[in-house]
Length: 114
Image 1: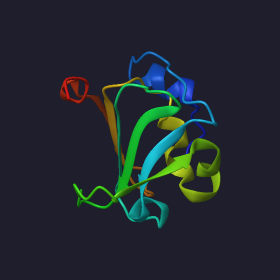
Image 2 (image 1 turned 90 degrees about the vertical axis):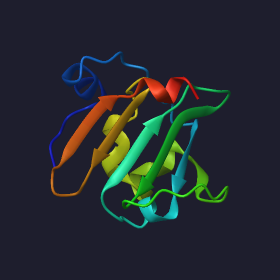
Image 3 (image 1 turned 120 degrees about the horizontal axis):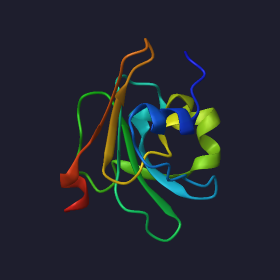
Image 4 (image 1 turned 120 degrees about the vertical axis):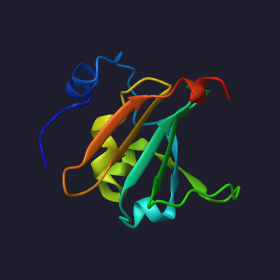
């Protein structure tokens, strides 16, 4: 695992740096918290005390309203530390990573149009 910071990730992908405060929440699937790979993330607009991030593990995505659970970002160090360095990417960004070093980050305008 490399030591890139959130700012480094934003610079690497020429993205604005929009932090996700530790007291904000993300939506995260049980599969991501259990380490299922790959880990997928996408960021909607920030709203209230939610960062806009939705994170899930594995290849399957579910529309089940209980698929994502709210989690404060401060708990990610214990629950899903691999994603922390991506959480300052701005709304509209997505990432796909695994625990072997694979990393894909891209902007998806459709996220902002939903």
